[in-house]
Image (cartoon, rainbow, N blue to C red; front, side, top):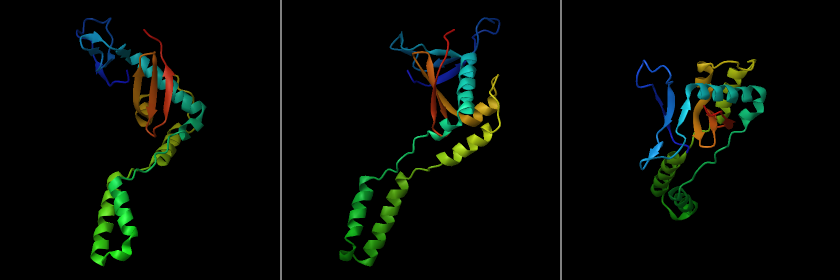
Length: 171
């Protein structure tokens, strides 16, 4: 369902057959199970390994992030239009409009650091061989979050915004 998951532990320590799981916050909705709702630590680790290995095998995937366009508010556009008619305004009014325009632009600016983050990710992956086992340090450096879907697949979102779809086996 794409909801947030939280980590849960077995209720009783002596119930060794129960393993720690990730449970969807939307699992129960209106007294009904609304999604598959659970994924184990092993499945999450496997998904992380497979996603990172996909980046190691094909580093060009790192550059497939979506460049975000800069947003401009309607207030900013109106101020811009008023400034274009600058001949009709006095100096104090122009200064006030420039300040308001700068303030409005600042509200909508987005830091565009995808390229820098991608270069950092390339450094982490440089010379690295295919992962055979889960490495928590690498996962924390590269993975932002994981979105779990109903059809036994997840989308691993990396820190630069690139997402990779990875399937997993139900257990």
